[in-house]
Image (cartoon, rainbow, N blue to C red; front, side, top):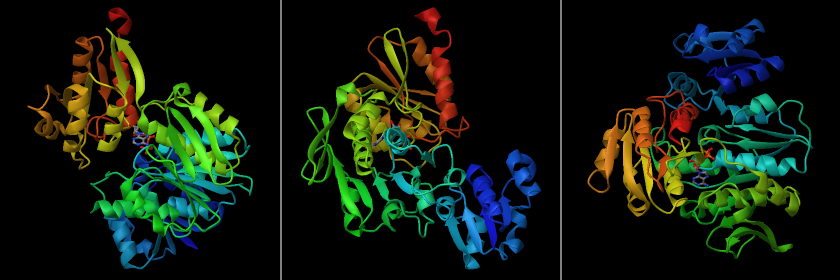
Length: 449
Ligand code: ADP
């Protein structure tokens, strides 16, 4: 078989490696020349992979039996379009890796909370099982961890909508959809297209599988009848179903057979905010359904620390607290960050625009913020929405904004970077943005107390 791998990043390299191991003719394609790609690509070529730059690949594309595409590649990509015209079978990297998997899969998707929930579930499942492998959109691709698995292996996979767009047989035994809120409006024509891609996580499940969904999310509730697996729910408002709920600050599981089971008092958790309660509920259900005892679930939840760049506390300067929520690249995650504090928030918004509607933040901003600070490429759009409605300041770069706020930090302020935008105008990625934000805050901190 001839396998074409489109995109030679981390997941493309891993799929090409799998393909070569199984003795397929393997062709790698990327828009960059090989000299600008990772050394791993050269190593693959030494093992027999052929490499083409995108514009030189149209002829060889015709020889492919299967095209595996990396999550970063859009439908509009010229090679993808041509492969479609030629009637080639095009699949995503998770679908490709799935063919080599012998283990059970717990898959997590949603607009926000995927990484946090994937990590939470990993911590819970590891309390009971030995061969637990975490990957997908989080760090290591599925293709890298899939080999040498057996029926005892448990994969905990974070899955993006881009990966789900091109699945055929991918079938998690437990599938979780955390929420559906607008995101990636730059890549999807309509919101419905994006929601539909996310719902595909349930597509190949049957009545022996489990689905876990957010009952407080109306967009999801509308689509539930399509799910064929056993449904479990979580909600912060209701508790008349099998799944998880919160009452008076405690998280409970509830199943027809087992009744109500207290899991954890939220005061004991290190992760904060109503959104994290959703992640905790979904993770507890997944743990329980996969056989982890309630005490072990509780232990894992209590031990769990916030992941970096997700509402991460950085420092207190002059009585003001600085938080790094660089991962918040859409308005819903910003809304959740705002809801995690009472008031006096100074909100840093800006970066590369992803087509977000900042005006949907107005109510929450007016209720909880004392000031909005716009920065980066999209600052004009931030200004249009907030200037005149609340105290507003603007800087060209995040560095200038941060240093300015640090200089004038006042007791009681919550200075929150929760930008609602991508980072690529000024930074490599959201991690780079978060790390630099922390560095600027912490530099010389001790001098000022
Ligand atoms: P993802 O992997 O889906 O991007 P993360 O766990 O990395 O999710 O969190 C991304 C951002 O969303 C962070 O700002 C975080 O504080 C926020 N967030 C986390 N969980 C949720 C949730 N359940 N609902 C809304 N926002 C969330």
